[in-house]
Image (tube, rainbow, N blue to C red; front, side, top):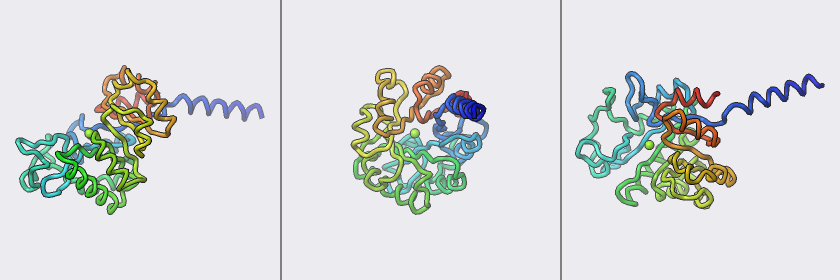
Length: 251
Ligand code: MG
């Protein structure tokens, strides 16, 4: 009996010494050979590490096409105001062509162990944001990716549209300016905040957990900052250095 108790205590000790924090590759794993930010290659490379999730940014063109790109401008063309045909040949730094969201999600579907952290960028008007959210949710659901896709946005309007159209999804707000209790009242499932905000509001991690929200932080790249976030026991760290972050989180 004593022996069993000892083994249980040891197992508990080993398990509890591991961090629960999981790692998300910011714009995929792009900081390596042959990759580029927001490329399908970066998604595949993130899944090979492996990490919990791979983040990417989505914008809608003037004719309703959904593309994966961080900046709202390509060259001198504002994506929201530009038809897809005009930007479709755009090359990423690794030579890959500007990905369509549909192609990106199709690639993600082949990597079911990797969560797809889909950031919907703010669009020029509320109407455009509402159209983009409706089109994205429709595509995700039609592809059967409701569980694999998690949504994030800096736009509260986008987050609120997501709560309406996809109420069982994981939805987190990025702008880092609203207390967790208010986020909970709006029906979101998490906060995904700039890590330095927790210098001012270290209580927000515990407050978020108390009301049942997940806590993600962006974009944490330096070892001391990564360690600080691990010590705060956030649920997720979004980083440009997913290999190093994962190694640190496993210590
Ligand atoms: Mg992003």
